[in-house]
Image (cartoon, rainbow, N blue to C red; front, side):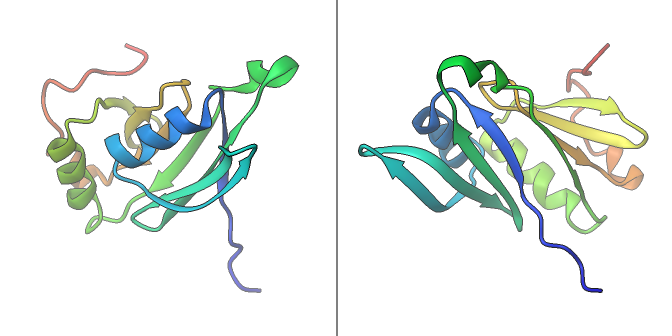
Length: 134
C-alpha cells in the first residue's frame, strides 16, 4: 500500500483575514480557493510541502473556529529553514515539550500548528521564546 495523502482543515471566522495571515504573515502560498458571492470561502495554502485547508464557518457552527491543531514533523535538515523563516518574518512562536521538542504557531482564530523539532535543533531556538502551557 502506498502512503496516504492527507491535509488538515482549520475552521476560521473570516476567510479573507485568515488568508492574509497565512500568506502575508506566515508566508504560505495560496494553492486554490472557492469563492461564494465574490468572497473567499474555502482555500488551501501551503508552506514547505505542508498543505492546509481553511474553511470559513458562520452561524451556529461558528464556535468550531479556533479549535484546530495539526502536527508537522520536521527532519533535521528542514528545521533550520523553518527557524530562519520564522525569525526573518518576526512570527510569534512558542515552545512546548510535547513528547519531543515542539514549536507552536497560532493563527488569529486560535488554531495551532505544532512543528516537531529534532532535539538537535532545540538549542537553536531563540532563548526568549515563550513557553506554551507554562
